[in-house]
Amino acid sequence: MVTAPVHRVPAGESAHRLIDAMTLDRNSPVPLYFQVAQHLGAAILDGRLPPGTRLDNEVQLAEQLGLSRPTMRRALQHLVDQGVLVRRRGIGTRVVQPRVRRPLGLSSLYDDLHGSGQHPATAVLSLSVEPASAVVAQALQLPAGGPVTAIVRLRSADGRPIARMANYLPHTVIPGFVEGLTVAALEQHGLYQVIRGLGVQLHAADQTIGARTATAEEARLLGEPRGAAVLTMQRTAYDDHGRAVEHGSHLYAASRYSFELSMLAPHPS
Image (cartoon, rainbow, N blue to C red; front, side, top):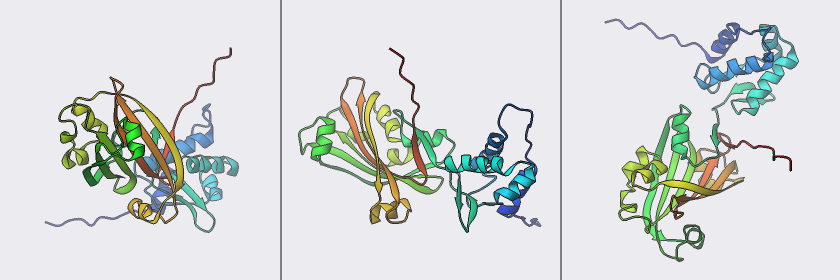
């Protein structure tokens, strides 16, 4: 049996072909810059323009598409703002790994990644019973030093580490609650899915989001340079009886992750 050789198209050539084939509706009310950004953004998300692909400069792209330079610049900047392109002097414009854009809601990172078409994977770094620290005890409404199950996990998206998650669960929710928290279950499912499967109905949560720089160990785990920016999240989740059932302290690589929220203007009084 003779196997035909596989001919791989260089990333730059692939980008050139994709832009050549791009169709813009110049009579549409949708601005041209936004049409360009939509086409390129879709190609990045579905893998036709993989991370590392270098795009021509805005002058060449504008000429190729028959657009003005300001229109092309605005399209590229829109994608930079979305976190899927990076522009650097001396390097040019390159595709980067898209950030995980996570809406603020009572959901797990595993479910959010899976729902956005990415491939989550989990490594359980530790699973143990330990005395609750003062912070954890206060969050879970426990006596200081009371036993909690402590879980530390490393969550990856499409093969790249994105978050280090430490979660603490009390032993006072329902019989057998913490016994159901196994390494196998935590590697195959999100924590909230596991908790719900054990008969606990999550209802609400208090959450605080912050930012700081990573320590050397945190940077190593997340595959980031030492001192890189990280996002932090502390969350305490409550069941439908108002009991605190989980407290989490999470750390996210800011280069590949962001929180998003929608806001409404107050009604005039």
